[in-house]
Structure formats: C-alpha cells, structure tokens
Amino acid sequence: MEFTYSEEQEDLRRTVRAFLERGAPLSEVLRTATEGGGHDRRLWQRMAGELGLHGLALPVEYGGAGFGPVELGAVLEETGRALLCAPFFSSVVLAAQAVVDSADKAAAAALLPGIASGDTVAVLALTGDCTGDDPALPVRTVYRAGEWRLTGTVRPVPDLCAADRLLVPARTEDGIGLFSLSSDTPGVGVAPLPSLDPTRPVGVLDLADAAAEPLGEPGNAWPGLRHTLDVALAALAAEQVGGAAAVLDMSVAHASTRHQFGRPIGGFQAIKHHCANMLVDIESARATAHYGLLAAEADAPDLPLAASAAKAFCSAAFTRCAETTIQIHGGIGFTWEHPAHLYLKRAKATEAFLGSPRAHLEAVAVRAGI
Image 1 (tube, rainbow, N blue to C red):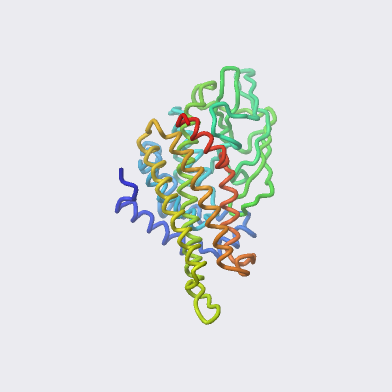
Image 2 (tube, rainbow, N blue to C red):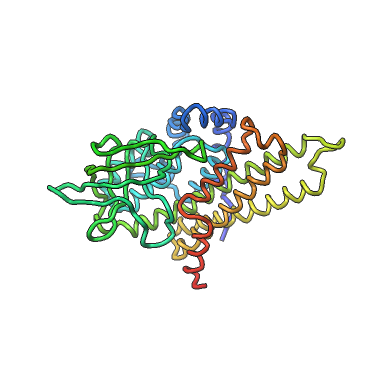
C-alpha cells in the first residue's frame, strides 16, 4: 500500500498551498478570527470559483469533480496548515458526505450542486462523542399532518451561523433519521457561542417544532451517518497533520534566526530534540491519516478502526506539536500577535471534536477485539 500522495495529488496540494499563502496569510487569518467573525467569505467564493475545491470529492452528476477522500485529504492538509477561516470542513466534508451517504438522489440533486459551487453552506448538526452506534441525539421528531417536525437543542455546532442549510440527525419511532431544513425556517433559532478556536466559530441550534424534510428512510439513517463520520474522522486527521506541519516549520524558522549566547537557538541540543520529536510525530500522524483516507477511498471493512485510530493519534500529535512550538518560541509564543496560539487553540478544539482521543482509543480497542 502506498502511503504517499501521487504526483498529481502533490500538484494539487502545492496549488492549494500557494493559493492560501497568497489569499489567506496568517496576518489575514488573525484579522478574520478577531474582526471578521471567523469566516472569510471572499476567500470561500474564490476557493469554489477559481480552484473548484468545494466539489472536488463530489459526484460528477451533482456538479463535482468525482475525486475521492485521498484528494480531499491533500486539500485538508493545506487548509489545516493555513488555519482556513471558512466552513470548508463543515460544508464540504461533513454535510456533503452526509447527503451522499443518505442515498437520497432527489436530495443530492437539490443540495449538492449548491455546495459544490459554494452558493450553499450546509452543516451537519451532530456533536459529542460519535464513536459508538447509539449516539445521544438531543432532537426529537413528531410526524404530524404529513410533515416532520423537529424540536431540541444542539450545541456546539461548528460554522452554524454561516449555514444556509441544516442537516439534523434525530430519533424517530423507527430509529435515527436525517432531516434537512433551511436556516430561516420558522422555529429555527441560531446563535453564536463563545469558542476556544476563533478560526472555527461554533453556535447553538434551537429547534421548536420546525418543519423538515427527511433524507432517505426516516428511521434508517444511522448506517449512512456512521460512514459519514468515519470519512470525516480521516479527513479531520489530515487537517490536523497540516496544522502540526505548519508549527514545525514555524519552529525551525524561528530556531534558525533567533540568537542567544551568540548562536542560533537551533544549535542547542534541547531545541534539536524538540524539533526531532515533532517531526517523528508528524510523519507518524501523516501515515496514520493517509491510511484512514485510503480505507475511506476503498470503503474498506476496517474503515471504522482506521478512522478512529487516525483521529486519536493525529489529535494527540497536533496538540503536542502546538504546545512545543510555543515553548520553542519562548515569550513571543505567548503573545496575541503571534499565530502560535491560534494553532494551539485549533489543536485543542479539533481534539475534542467528534470524540476525544481517549474515546477513539477505546473504540479502536473494541473494534480490534483487544
């Protein structure tokens, strides 16, 4: 099995990196995170219009390019490196994959072209520990007068306040259903929540007897959602690898130019050890994430195990690297103006998102029969 990107995939990654370095340098990321509400809408539209990234892994018949999770992972490494302030993961990875996995062709035809063009921002309102097969879903359903009605509160939902379309898993009498509704539907309340990571804002979704349309069979959505989550976990691991690689590069650059006692601090053994440990973490994490993406591409039987392993390992690796880079930078690493704190906040936020490393390690143990 090949654990590296192909030449074409590397070209894609380099193209995305160059685009984001020009369009979203870290100075602009800091401004967007503090003044722009965490979303760069101009960059969002450029990513869709100039590079076609939103439809990269979507089926051709719905306006996509027909590529798969590995190509999407190459893009996510670069969005993670750049701390992208846009709902790319929420809309293009989670929500779009949920629509595909619902096997509802009518819903796919209605929703996916808008997601692929960037005209529609969709979010999947599913949070908490997503490692098991019996998730705690706070939304209740009632079927009344030929309509499905949703009531409940979901928090925190990433990128919620930017969403046009909401996909909400909820329990029905027959099981778990996936429902779609517009963010301006009567009975829908959306409000921002304080967030550790200002580059990926979160919100609270309040539903009060809101009318919604089911995707697929209303009581049989969980198998598709389980697959969606496994693909998303591998994709999130790739994003975490990109963030970890960025802080290593930042640390090496600082250690090469920062002088102390008449020499670059990178010449001191302690700094060398820190950078070497970060590199080992990143290369191991990249291999783990890439295996998860390959398993998703092949829809392999061990995808759930590979996805949980990738999420657990890459979450821990990103956090260790982000903490180490602040230590290497010394006093400047603690200042608001330096981007190091943004990477640490992204690391801690993604560590908790869709299940903690501990929860996923326990899932790995169960699935591996340990």
